[in-house]
Image 1 (cartoon, rainbow, N blue to C red):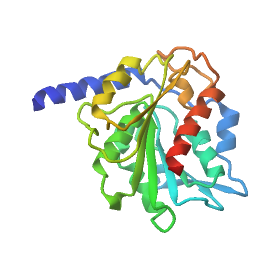
Image 2 (cartoon, rainbow, N blue to C red; image 1 turned 180 degrees about the horizontal axis):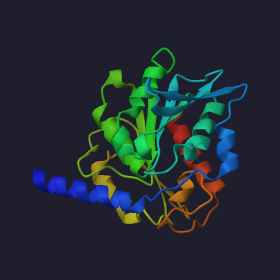
Image 3 (tube, rainbow, N blue to C red; image 1 turned 120 degrees about the horizontal axis):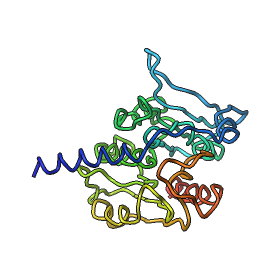
Image 4 (spheres, rainbow, N blue to C red; image 1 turned 135 degrees about the vertical axis):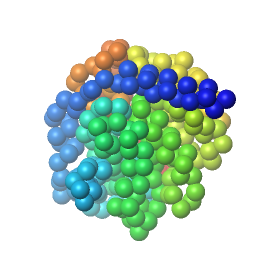
Length: 251
């Protein structure tokens, strides 16, 4: 049984890599605006003492909540492509971060959310809404699975066009979970989402975006390899994403 699980994990890994070819944050105007500090939000890049990037942080001048947001990017996607999402919530007064795993590959930075929590300790953020897109969601689910205790300060999990790995079972997770998917997604299929239900809690909220695709879960002007064209605008898709993450931040 352990051998079979290992084979499943290897197959899952190869599938993720094959579907996630390099994508850049080329929606330049939106990304540049999100990455620029203002009078109300300070944008930082937190690095280790050796210079390795850990995350992009968005610190509100006047926080409205002690709950914060952490986003894991999809495989090989420039983390800055998710900056507009993080900045949206920082502009509303929430601490937010996009982790920057080595080589933009989430499996090499599963614990990177911990760097965010260390930077903004419990005196600033008492609990975190954590999630990610595609492989980033897989990694976020692994992180939440391993950090369920109250001391870990994990409030909830969100999955964007994503699901858990074959070795991660969250069916008994006693935390809010929201999974958001698009019907025009060429990478994460509706069958993938259906299959994911058995590994998620019964109370999981499934949000279906009619006409949404894989690429519009982040900010890029180039269609990701193997994805299908969206049938709605990026603004429409992002509005639904922001609404659902906002519900987790305020529940």
